Image (cartoon, rainbow, N blue to C red; front, side, top):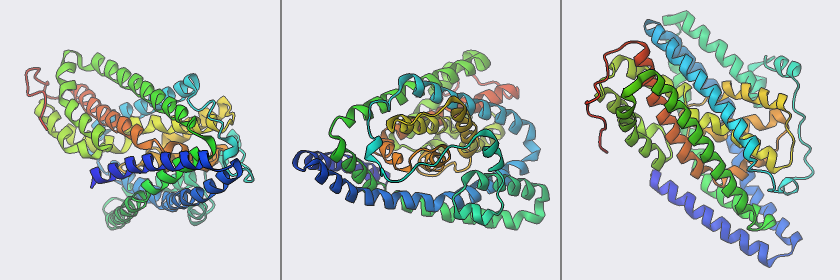
Length: 415
């Protein structure tokens, strides 16, 4: 199924490239714009489908996630140490993404500002005071109806903490919320099945009006992202090496195969069983690994987290929109929260980016600029997620002074 989806994505990219080139070469500029408007209808439907699932997805997954994390009080010490690593790694990932996208400027020169719906005025980004005031929902139902994602996050945090505080009395409610999350996740899977059609339309529509020159922008985007990912991975390995020392070599061999699986399948979840088995085979405590890894899959998807700032700022650059440094800092703080709310969702980063754009006056149509090459970048960020969680488990185990990892232990579980 996964391979079939990848093939559909590749076919959609090639088909969109061919269709857009034909339209751009054979029609007048006005005719190309008309043809692009038909492609835009397809991408518009996909955008509405994504917006349809954002609020219920965040509400159910974040509420149930917080409820479970707080209920693990018996391993609170391990959880605290893990969260210190997770939050620090997420913050660093966001900063690297923000710095690198400003330095490399992959979106500059794309000249797509006028290719968007020119008649739709962009919302104004909020200042700090307005941003803070806007955090609190007057009604959770109103917030969900308007897709006010931060307000949904705030309510979800309160609800999750309250459920954990009540304990056993709220066990049934927590189970219902988990069931709701499962259903929403399945709906998300259905929505993402429409992605190849949106990819075809996005590429065809963009090339119809912009020509093949836009491919240079895509190459810059993918190349810049992988440079940034490499810096993030290198930094994580260095910090982990400072903590685990000479055990780093066997550790990297242990997480190599899971990372390759994540890279080839574009999903970090596919690598979870092998990563768990590999780390336990290294001599890590099963108690620590079995707790830290699931926690990491909710709070330590550093590759996906970095991608969010990178993608949002790329869209701003592509549309020629200047985002002041103050607004970029607000974006970073916002993503520190929202990127934790929908872990494990296929193409979760797209949902986070879609929820972030309106808050900073960025056109939602820009999502389709990155959608065209999202699969290529998803491979890198999925592998980075796996590497980050493997390193986190090793670091937490070292902090806990768990059973030492024997350097000569089986370093890798073969696929």
